[in-house]
Length: 115
Length: 113
Image 1 (cartoon, chains in turn yellow, purple):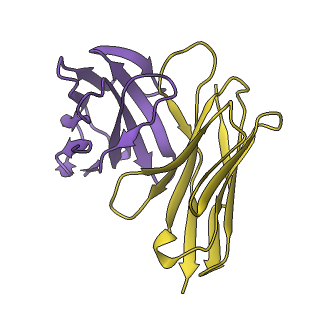
Image 2 (cartoon, chains in turn purple, red):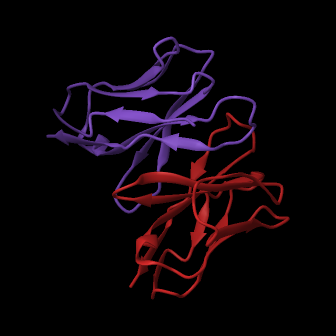
């Protein structure tokens, strides 16, 4: 089955700097890769996603890149702000012919943005 | 549009008891997935329901079960609770396709004593 590895587990940056979180996946048939942000006491919130027919997607300060050949995808946050501090999860759907929404999550990255 | 709601938000049970958690998806969403979140194992997929049918199941024992009603609301049940079942249980809803965005609820925090 699908396996998703996420690095780093913790990341501390100064306000205004950029943050990059990387994930690798094992199933070459995976075709959907969402990123979630989870704040304390809340459920994960989708911040951006990418589908396998696109190599890069950007939404204001957030961007995601996908390299299907290497089976990795990355989250880039520019001009970080203290409110970006949270736990970030990458995920991938199981590929193949199964038409389900099962998500396999990475282990999470705790991002701390220092003012 | 209202988001995904889960009830109750917090629950304390003792070993051997059973528990039922409820999830109401976003209006129009037909798929509901359940996940268990723990500090040690992270977010793990339990099962997914679509149009009242279980479409996929994760690697959890048979003590974990679920169902979905005709209005897409879903419940999950855990019987014979164990200490290790203490976790945040999250449900997520989507329109139903394999690459559809999933929206998570706030979760139910279960503590087993």
